[in-house]
Image 1: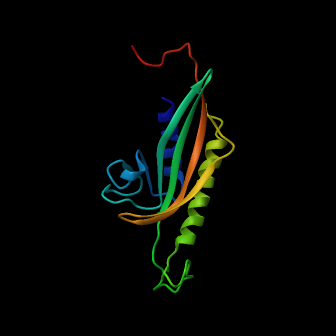
Image 2 (image 1 turned 45 degrees about the vertical axis):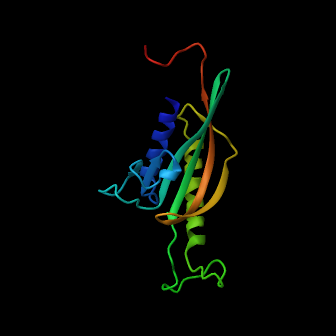
Image 3 (image 1 turned 90 degrees about the horizontal axis):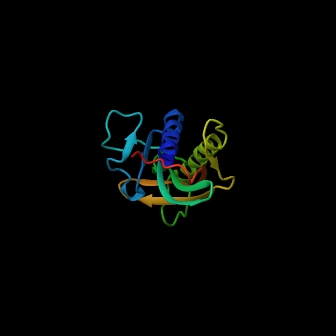
Length: 167
């Protein structure tokens, strides 16, 4: 039940955030398949960026608490700005003329918004670790994207004396 509550909270944050257009969960290698929920589009055939994508990475338990680690990807499409007359990032010898730096900056801000909201929500039963690791990424698959993956560690109450599985 704990992952479902965290997933619902992430979906609600994505839906409410003015800069997020898609949300999904599952294996990040499957981004772009039917596991992506497009929030503001009538079709699920294509991701509308920026995208927030959550992947449960691990869980551990000890007496009284459950630790759940979730990787949350904040990504946007990297576009060429060569024809727009914009600022060129990267090495000119490699021909990088894109908005990668802007994408990384924007996605870092969105990640910070989510971390703040998850940390400061008194209605939730979890505690988010005060230290969140963020790792930069750039990928080229169907779309060239860039962003950050935040490793979020949630601590949830857990009682060894109660069975939560219906019988």
